[in-house]
Amino acid sequence: MGKDTPVKISEHFKTLTDPRVVGRTSHKLIDIVTIALCAIICGADNWPEIESYGKAKYDWFKEFLQLPNGIPTQHTFRRFFIAVSVDELENCFLNWVKSVFDTSKSKVVPIDGKTVRRSHDRSSNKAAIHMVNAWCVENGISLGQIKTSEKSNEITAIPELIKTLELTGCIVTIDAMGCQTKISETIIDKGADYILALKGNQGNLNKDVELFFEESRQNNFKDIAFDSYTTIDGDHGRIETRKYTTVSEIDWLQGKENWKQLKTIVMVESQRDVNDEISEETRYYISSMENCAEEIGEAVRSHWGVENGLHWKLDIGFREDECRKRKGNAAANFAIMRQIALNLLNQEKTIVKAGVKAKRLRAGWDNNYLLNVLNV
Image (tube, rainbow, N blue to C red; front, side, top):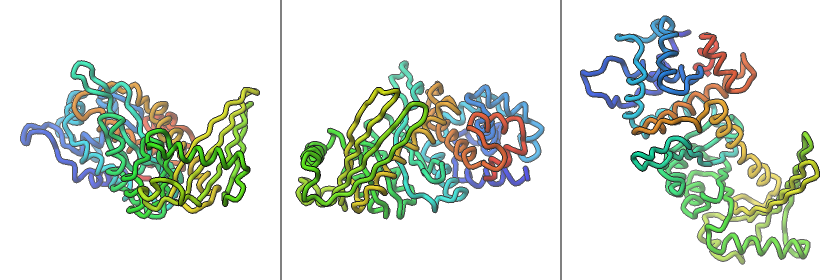
């Protein structure tokens, strides 16, 4: 079983160009990538830990890797991931997702960004890297990611990410930063629907939608065809009520023609009661979907799965926000390797039904369990 594993890994990384000088390398590319990936799955969060893991598992790795000069040093891992192409590694990641994971179940695909906070480098005036991620709610995996240099560049990065994904029949949800006409067009062109959050970044669009719903609510939506859906959740002294109201009679909406296949506007009223302290919030969205408050409401609610299923796990399970890699492509490439590891760990459910941190520990202790993770 072990002998099959490196073959599969080499298949996924076969398009990766070796950035090192030909004839001056002591370690094979696939050895470096395989050891790094296994180490990250098993709990390593930095270069010294990857080297230590490799040395501890040398006899096991020797069963299927050539290791002509033993285990690479931490400096070799560091130099390699500083130099290797982020775009090429992202393509390897996307190809892995397409070949290993069943994405046919994808229905709601939230797209959201996350900053790797300690990846900034003041000495070179380099900002922290920002990764934009696409998350599959149904499968609990990351479908893809793309690096931006600053959060404002999400506007240009999101369409590029969308173009790499198979989205036919999906619902793509994006927060207000991604509420752009070009993004709506890119989503429709990929055969998907969109739900885009509104804020003040779209001129009068947010204001017009907000005023419409305020006036309609005051008149109890008299003579207006609308749909509504309410959910109530509660535990440990918390009660959360969300009411979704949708309207598709929007010929009056100025600028509607600029948004490809825009059909519905949405109001979400949230009330949170925590130990008798009540807070309220109202949010607005535009969508290409038909006027069905329940379906739209469930998709809006699912959007926050990217926070709990991806961002939270990266921070808690992989300590991503503590990552201090700053030189060259190291931070972005390590982020990609973390997401490959997280996808594999999320899909391993046959042996250990536990959190990511516990799975990483088990993989580090038990080679057979690690092979189950790698062969999902």
